[in-house]
Amino acid sequence: MFKHGKTGQTYYSVREKINYYTDIVKGKRAADDKLKAKAARRLPELQRLDRQSYSEPKVIVTDDKKFGNGMSKPRLCIAVKEDSKKRILVAPLMSVTSNYVILDNNIDRQISKTADGRNKWIDRSDIYEDKYITPRLELTERDKAKIKRLYSD
Image 1 (cartoon, rainbow, N blue to C red):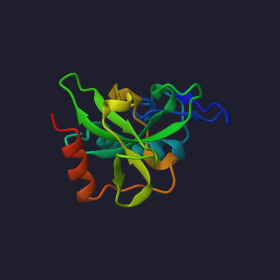
Image 2: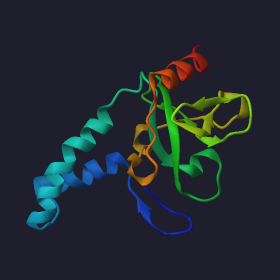
Image 3: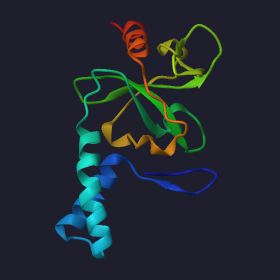
């Protein structure tokens, strides 16, 4: 969970939402029928997000403070790979500057290898839904191939 540095809006991670909705479904939290129905609908979707594999690059959202920014805010990233400890290597999207991978569907953004020190390993509990970022970004097969080649060991 983090609060946006300017707006004060609270953002909850996927795991925090799973815990909240699970408590509602199990009756551990007081909730009206409308909220119980919403929790029952949302829980499978959130659990699918939490279980997803990161063997292929995926677009995710995390707190920008993880990358050294002084203010918390949603940051669009590419989840590149997962290690044996279930941590996710994420590469933040940045404005175009030079020799980086530029994404096919969004040529105004790019990712880079760890040479500039911006990529970080994060825990699965620090991943948020991508509904906070517009426009939505979808990785093409070419994007995935470029990213895999860039991060091949």
